[in-house]
Length: 327
Image 1 (cartoon, rainbow, N blue to C red):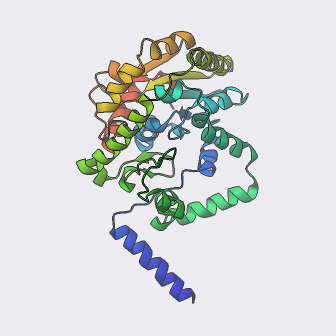
Image 2 (cartoon, one colour):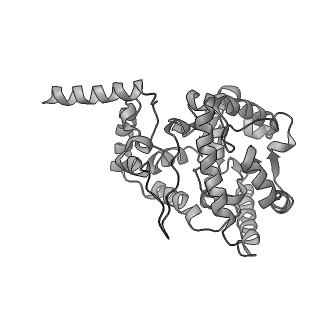
């Protein structure tokens, strides 16, 4: 019986690998919590934000060049506010923090944008020894088996790929191709080489972004107090971190094509980015202000390829204050 099970599992694994699937780690709360525990290291630089920071920071390039640990705490499709507040309210955190700004997520108080990061913070604080043991056992297995890709191959993931027509009051988010997102053990997201070179796959993701942009164009404007509320929370958090000897830098990672065209209109930097830097008195690194980053192109409009991430990371290292990059 065990032999039959082993043959079935082995055959499925070989089939997936021959079909182009690559190893990918489950980017859920246990993996986030593992990284959250690393923020106290003397050689740690912490990165928070949304999915762009996860794609655009190449951890290997950062650590090889600086000799410092890159602690990746960004979370796809969310606001970094719960993580920023968690670090600000942690008296033991006195380190260097890079906060990436995706304006439509950062300058928002929509509850759904904070749900996952708040859940990850809560999991970190309450994780049991049994949950930690389960995480490390799963890590051992998923580091060798493609078939354990929870985000692409689980039953729920398969349900999400079903092409179910929209109905009145019910709509389905278009699926992303599996080649678009793989995740390393360091929580870095990356596109496969196939995706980076296949314009058809890239256009599929562009169509998803276009769908979101069209949906957002019909949404009511945020309440007028939203931006002032966000600025106050961020400023208070930055001041707490600085009072303990830490420091904070804001980044604006690249976007391209239709996404960037929308953001220039909907999120004017003089009303958001510039105001954020003035309110917090923090250094800001905007991709459009730097010759080394302004020409980087996101294949699907919103995230850099692995090659682009390496270029961006090298540029970022030269632009950050020395305390963020010196070991």
